[in-house]
Length: 321
Ligand SMILES: [Zn+2]
Image 1: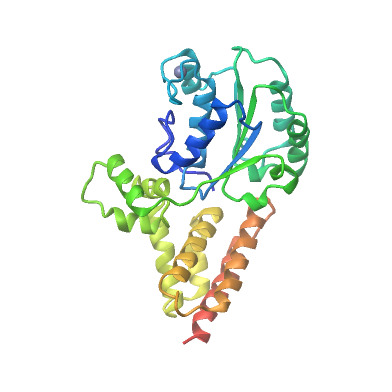
Image 2: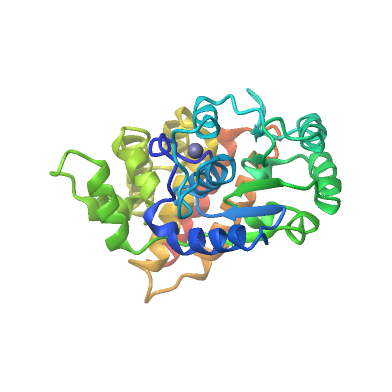
C-alpha cells in the first residue's frame, strides 16, 4: 500500500511529530556526520515519505536558515516542480509492484556522476521493501562504496522486508505513531469541517494522522467501514464467509489485507485486550503471509483466499462462544 499523499503538498517542514528525528538529523548535517544512507521507517500513515521529502529540501536548498529550507531558491523551486537535476525518486514503474534492477542500476550510475548544481545529490527509494532481490544487490554496491555528497533515503513501512545486508549499512529512523493529542491538533488544522469527530477518525486510522486525513478525503473510509461491518457480521454468524468473500472482490487485495490487519490489531488491543485469543495471533500471521504473497506479485485467486481467511475468521469466534 502506498502512503497517503493528501498532506504531502508542502513538505518543506517535517510534521509536528517528527521534531525529535528532525532535530537529530539537523545536528548530524551541521556536524557533517550525516550518513550516506538512511531508512525512514513508519506505518504508512505516519509520514515517513514526508520526512524524506523534507530532508531532501533541507539538503538541496541553498539558503537554509536554522535548519529550515527557504522554499524560494532555485533548489527548492526545482525540487517542488519535480525537475531538480540532482534529485532522484525511485518508485515501482506503472503497473509494476516491484522496483526493478534496471531502475537501481540507472540510479547508481546517476549518483556516481558529479552533481549538476554543485551541491548534494539526493535519492528517495520508496517503498524500499519492494526492491527486487537483484535491485537490492545492485544497491548494495553503492552502499558499500558511497559517493561523496550523496544521500540515499529509503522509505519503508515494513522494515523487516528489507534485506539485512541493506539495513545493516543504513541509519534507521523509525517514526512512532504520534500522541493522539498532537495528531488531533494537527488534523484540526488541516480540516475545515469542525464537525468532524477527530478522535473517532484517528482511532479508525489506528492513530495514523495521514491515513485519517485520507479517509476524510473519501479515500477508502466507506469501503473500509463496509469491510469492517462484514468482519463483524461474520463474527456474529450473520454473514457467510462465501458471501463476504464475494462482496470483497471489488476491493484491491492489498487494501483489503491492510484493513483486516488494522481491524484485528485494534480488536486485540481494545475489545479483546483482557481476553486474549491465541487463534487470533495465528490468524494475524496468516494475514501477514498473505500480504507478503500479494506484494511478491505472485498470481493469486483472491476469491479462494478471502474464503479461506473468512472461514478461519468465523471459526475463531464460533469456538470461543
Ligand atoms: Zn531553498
